[in-house]
Length: 360
Image (cartoon, rainbow, N blue to C red; front, side, top):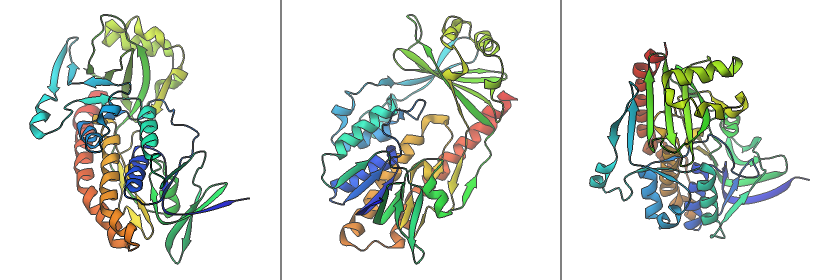
């Protein structure tokens, strides 16, 4: 039998955008139900690059000391290997001048970040997280979204927030049109063990025909291998792939033996797109559900969190007063669309001017 619930806000998706938004609503005394399709947050190769902007939000919420006790790696600079030697490309220290309390990038497993947010949100009785609850359809009345359905639940709400990622089922059900940009690349993610004597940096490797990012994670490297769109090496020889890695950085000769099979890799279909309209009556899309980002710069989590904060700041008052209007949802898009467009334009420029020529 389908169980029925009623709440003020129903958030589809327990990712960074959904949990931050729900946490802020609950802090403001607004009843919110988060529906997470999985039983836990354990996913490999999800965005885990926490920028100074998001660290500042943790600081403003009073969470920063506890947050920084979680397992993480601090990245104070970005380096580049263009000829076999690693050189500093840029540092984040100058961000102190812009009043960022934590002027570095924190690399943190996304599941730890999400568990932390869920625990903080659970301190508020207005917050409910329901796991194993995949949204499959919208409930509409008179052209307005009034709730969602899962296989076992029907949740009615004053507002539905789609935060269910780049393959958003809610967005698809709402029929909201997308605008897509050219993306010439895909990414193959994998791990290589860190060895004593290895650098403790985040650095890129640039060679003609090859681009990689080596991300230091304490006891291992998280590696992003960039490749032309559709040119997935997983269908070929793993030994040939390992030999190619060694040919461009001989220091990886021992490391590549950590790759036992293609199952140790994960393919990401890179997309850069955004909704033309982020909302319809009763529904708002935020985070990757509103705009899929390239992995370039590791901005995805941080834009999603910024969406969540802006949406909460704009919507808390109308929700609390029972006066939520379509104009409030449009205001969220106006607030967040320009930074999204600017960052996506920068990502497309990097892809077109740096990535595509080097992968040709």
